[in-house]
Length: 332
Image 1 (cartoon, rainbow, N blue to C red):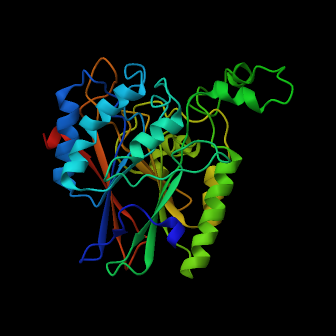
Image 2: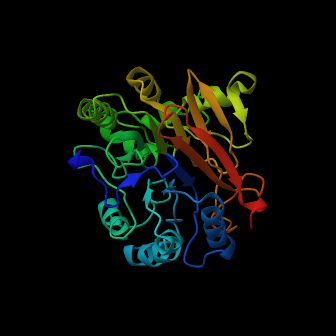
């Protein structure tokens, strides 16, 4: 398992429990709203997580315009985890790609923080915030769970690079009057990312001697989230749905791949700030995290859905992940 080691070993507590807090869409800037920072700290205090996932749109890249500014921003918003010595990782959202610097430079900056356990794939795989973080049992000897990250990247105009002859406006072609998805503005999960997930999952099963259950975190929701939201009486177990889902422009088959592989039973998404529902499709939970940012000049949202989502894993029953939405309006 050496190649999957993290900077800080992640393992269950003495009670056999491991807590993952996902906070998405801080989407703030150097002239930040104090409530955004208070919300991050309040969620940490309330949930006492063993791992934090920053779920994308970690800053507003339209306002944070350079690597130097990003460092100043992260010095502020990573501090609540760094000071508490809580391991944390990140995935990118579309606004993180708006920062005017190479994504590899951003990745190196994130990974330089002492408590950041983020990892990245190489140039053969699209995106930088693709990772798997193994969670060990309380003894630290056996992997009982995996936390996955997938980079959903930015806008759909990147799809033009897929065209062999460049004679088709793929974005225009997808802007149909009747469309199964809520939006066509966003990029896709690429086949090399699917292969990376599949091959890594198989390799870990071989190394561990069994299939490892997992949580997969991403910023842009997968298209099947629309099916969940459209069938609340059948699929939605809790929470609110009032914001367009905003999926990828094309269905890359991620959900089908996860279903066939059979290890990831919970998927967590950000992006849609006013959605904090959790539903189930084909035995897989699809959960939204609301947003944690308050700055009215860089983000949107409402106090009803602002917050973060906690996932609780038990080493003796790791296939059954318990999840709870914590709203900052109730704790700050």
